[in-house]
Amino acid sequence: MNKTTLRARYKALRATLDSNVIEEQSMAIANNALTLPIWKHTTYHVFLPIVKQHEVDTEFILHILQGKDKNIVLSKSNFENHSLSHILLTDSTILQTNAWGIPEPTAGIPIGDEIIDVVFIPLLAFDHSGNRVGYGKGFYDQFLAKCRPNTLKIGLSFFLAEEEIEGILPTDISLDYCITPSKIYSF
Image 1 (spheres, helix red, strand yellow):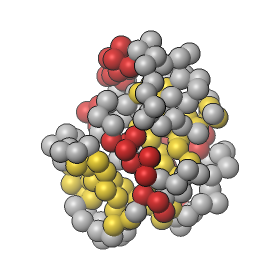
Image 2 (cartoon, rainbow, N blue to C red):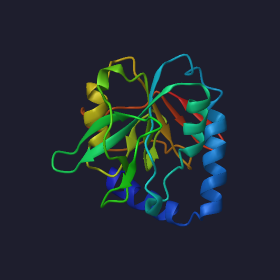
Image 3 (cartoon, rainbow, N blue to C red):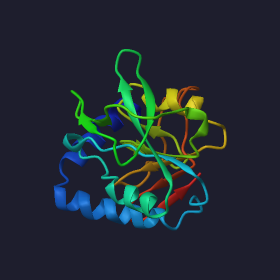
Image 4 (cartoon, rainbow, N blue to C red):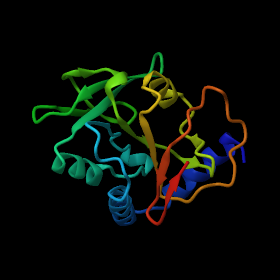
């Protein structure tokens, strides 16, 4: 299936999930994340969910990272050039939801793309080759292109993999892993 069709299909599927299901499945995803060989690293980028889009709730992953005393990085979106800047999460970080429903830090210590070891990535769909479909603006592709080649890219999804996503571009950055509530995919 092509990206446009997948985008519409998975937005509709996610819209059917109520808050209890989202919480339960997000917790299962976080528990599955604990089994991955990714915890020796120092700096982890985590997205904060857009609640109205029924995204995976990363609160459970945040608790794991805090419990392991890891550096946690959050993003701030620039919708003019579809880029992300990154801020270290600290006890004094103030979050504010932007006009698109994305919780973001208002200010803080900037972090360069090149020092991030692991990135947890929001997505709508993914396939058996690690290709992914997001909202189509390219924020994460731009960001991931600036990271080190060995930065781990981990998608989080409520749903299982599609067989194949059609229309993958050379600028599309694929995943190393994708975690679902029932399965972990390694690419």
